[in-house]
Image 1 (spheres, rainbow, N blue to C red):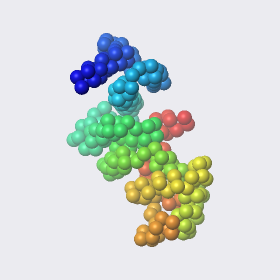
Image 2 (cartoon, rainbow, N blue to C red; image 1 turned 120 degrees about the horizontal axis):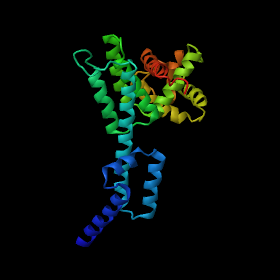
Image 3 (cartoon, rainbow, N blue to C red; image 1 turned 60 degrees about the horizontal axis):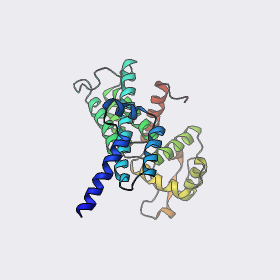
Length: 257
């Protein structure tokens, strides 16, 4: 048993030496590399090294990803402040009681489970709305609540909501009840994957968050459900959520990217 514990220690040491230099400056340079370069370095070390490195690699990658996201968010907030889009004192609770809270929740979202690009975009949009210059208290409160909703969604659900929002803007759907299976088939075709089951899986969360309308008869099974396809099922809350993202992208110059 003692021999096995010694082996684990010996395995850990060369891994940390190989990937994380002792010098703080060298470590900073390593973390400033593009994620592709970091991935290649760690993947190469894992391929060549003992299996005992695997768990440590996961922690390192997670830490690096969080660090990069914190850096990205900090730069974006600084840019918004420098451009006068959010106030310098956005975290002053006497002036905006949702400013500091929205910032804390944004960082918590990164720390709990590093978001992908789509989710981070949604989180930043709601943070922006809660801190935007000249926003009313009601708008700040709404955006803070939308930030809480965004934290509970994943990228698949956000993609579905975006598809529904695009259909809503095009007025693709008529005001009539259709079966849930018909609706999911339509949306699956719009998304391009034609997988109704995937739409159905993501749809549940949007109904639960009241971003889209629910079912005609909540007591029946999903296969027998009917939905009102008016507005592509987008609720006023869902429309506000999507419009927030649209506004954020437009006002930060990302709308055409």
